[in-house]
Length: 242
Image (cartoon, one colour):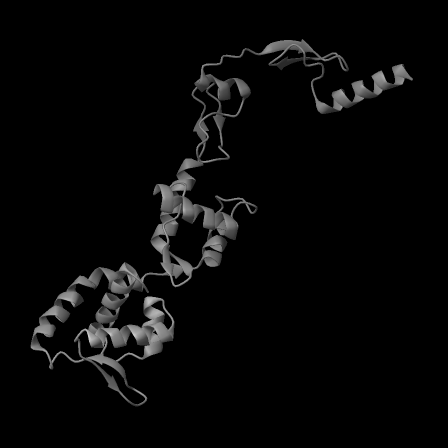
């Protein structure tokens, strides 16, 4: 609660008190994302600034804003209430914690089980805070010590990644492929991957030294057509040495 954060919390308290007749200290603390003790300190400082915040004792009581003591404050409260419409709409939206958002990402079918983890979700949040890229990061807000993700931001992130991971056509060989990463634009063959860097590699016909079949390879030094033939050729050479 220092610097601009303190001012933002004070404005949020005024917005809440203009929308509710009475609110307890715990309710105010939960809404603005601070502890009960800090909420009480903040209310005391607002009182010292001359804004009349009253206390109503009893089961239905709490802190309230008395605009009758200072008539000029009524127009200020109305202005703050109008400006709080966007905040009210945002507050009413569904929000998710990092763990809840991770479960939604896993169930979206776009993310693999090992990548859609809580750690990866944190990485996506940090990437957005740094680069503001909605395709590679998730917008999130700090609520106290925890991150909160809005439902519309999470769904927008999922839709962008689904669009990036749909089937594509390789611009070099024309093959239809399904990308594994959102930035993958080629089919994955070595000659297509190296083409954007100005490297042209042609496939060569090579005869397998184990089974004798011909196959396509990028280099003539390749001896076998598969790992199975490679292992069998290795065993044959080992027997010859013995």
